[in-house]
Amino acid sequence: MMKKNIIKLIMSTIIINYSIQVFFVLSGYKLQGDLLVFSADNNILNMVDPIPQIIVLMAILIGLAVNAVLVTIAIGLYQKFETFDITKMFEVKE
Image (cartoon, rainbow, N blue to C red; front, side):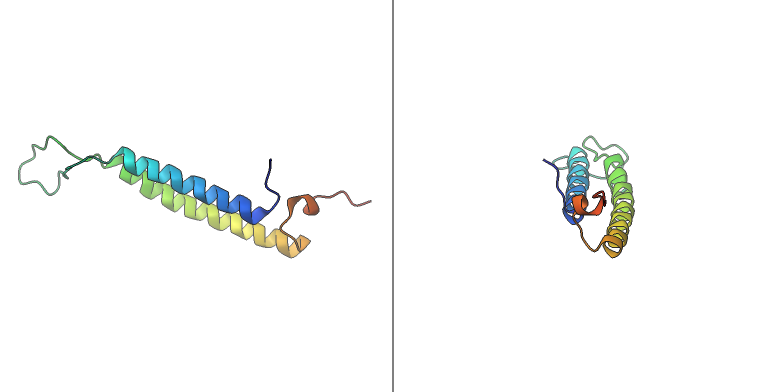
């Protein structure tokens, strides 16, 4: 079952994007974790991994840019076809 409304498609891609970002944040989480930067000595046994946090930060920025492009395309399609319904946009006119 495919959605026919472009706005619903854009919203679903945003939700999928954010759910993947939450997964990456949770993969780097540790209970009672500490950062190496805030330690007096450089010997921490339960250090938090900063790599997933960096990946999520980059994914947020890339996702924001992709979402802006999708909304721009949707606005352009609405101005041309005056509908958000995909089936009505691409009907073959005889």
